[in-house]
Figure (cartoon, rainbow, N blue to C red):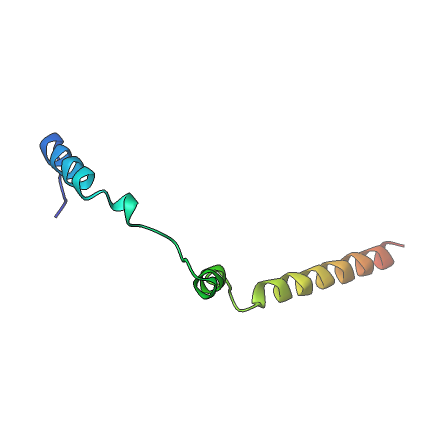
Length: 71
């Protein structure tokens, strides 16, 4: 089942949202602790930098081996 948004429905929602004005109440973290917690949300556990370093080392070894075999 789809949700059809008519122009009348959009106008109603627009009026309600302008009455609620949620942008006045939406704030980010205010305390230092909250800001630190927010800054850590994207942390993936440190595996990506380790994986990138491993891929870099393997690529360098492959290039060295390829050069040695070509000589």
